[in-house]
Length: 510
Image 1: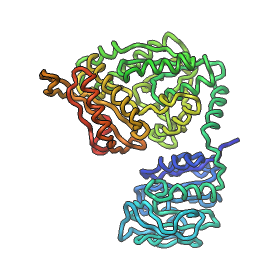
Image 2: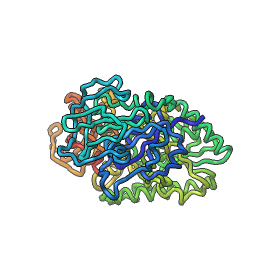
Image 3: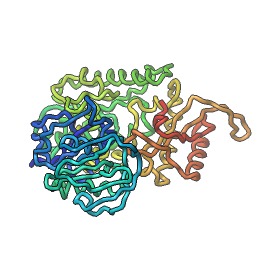
C-alpha cells in the first residue's frame, strides 16, 4: 500500500526543513520538493496535501520562484505559508503590496472561525517575518485572521480547500502552531496518519531483502548514529551477507571503540572488522596544527586504510552509505543525491569495487534516524549519542597532536560526560565535550608550582545544530566537574567554560 504523502514546495525559506519535520512528527509523511517541480511530477506523488513554504523573495520579482498554476486545479488541499500565502493570492487574482509596517517576531493575532483554527484561542500569538502582505483577496476567499498591522493574516476558500497564513505555524514561537498544522493535515487533507517508524522499519527491511537477495554488501562503520542505524537495518535484512569495516583512527572518545565492538560484533553478531589504525593516523598528523589540514589528512588516511581492507574482501555488489535527508536536500532538490563529502564516505566509491550504492536512511531526518535505531533494538547510549565530528578529537586538540594529548583529552572529556549524565543533564543538553586548548598557565598544586594545560568545556542547547546557545549548567555540577578534571587528569591545572552562542561562534572550536 502506498504511503500518504504531503508535498512541501520549497520557495527558499529558512524554516522549510522544519515544516517537513513538523508534518512527519504528526505521523504524516512529507517530502520537500523544488518550486519548479512539474505538474506531472506533483501528480505522480498523488499527494493528500500540498504546503507552500515561506521564502525571501517578493512575488513582484522577475526571478522570484513560482509554481505551476495548475496545482490549484488538482483538487488537492493547499496551505500557503508566508511567501506561499502571498504567491497563492497573487496567482489567483488577489493583490500583494509592500507593507508600510513590516512585521518581524512575535505578534498578537486574532482568529475567526475556521477549521484551520479549531481548538486555537481566538486571541493568540504568532511568529511573523514579512515585508510584503496580501491587501486584496482573490474572488471567493475570506479573511480568517488579522494582526494590528496585517489586516489579512490568514485567508481561505474552504470549498476549494485552499488555505493561507502570513505567519509561521511551524515554529515554536507561534502558540498552537502544531494544532494548526494538525488541523490542516487531518481535518482538511483527511490524512490517515500512517507514517510510523515501526512500519517504516519493517517495510525497509523487506525492500532491502528483495533488492539484495544473497549478494554481498559492504558498509563503513564509524560508530556514529547514522552509520550504526544503517548497518543495523542492513544486518537485519541480509545477515551475514553484510560486512562492516570499522576504522579506529585512535581519535575516538574514551572507550568508544570497545563500545562499538561490544554492541555490534559481540551482542548483535554483526560481521564487523575492526582496523586499529591509530599509529598510522598519528604519524600522518605529526606536527600538523592547522585544522583544515588535519581534516584533509584524516580523510585521505581513512580512505587509504579502508581501501586496503576492501581489497582483501574483493568485489561486492552494494556499498552502504549513511546519507540522511538533510544531506539529500543540501545536495540539490530534484537532483540525484551527491555523495556526502565526509571523512568516512567521501571518496569511498572510488576505492571499492561495487555495483550500486544503498542509502537506507536517505528519506529520514536525524531525529527519525534515532527513532528508527530504537525501533531496531539498538541501545539508547548508541542511538542517543551526541554529535561527534568525523575527524574526532583531532579538531578538539588545538595545535599539534600527540598520543599524550589524546589520552589527556579523552580522560577530561570522559569525566565531563560522566558528570553531565550523573546530573541528569544528558537528555537536556544537545552536545557537550572538552577541548584541549593550546594554552598553558601557572598553577599551584599542593606546595608546588605547575605550568600545565587549560581544558575548555563546551555545552550547548540546540535542535539541529544550525544555531545553538550555551547550556546553563548548575554551579555545583560545574564545580564538581572542574575539581575532578584537575585532580584526576595529569597535566591539567585550569578549567574554563565557553559561554558563546552560535552564531557568532561555531559549536566546535576548530
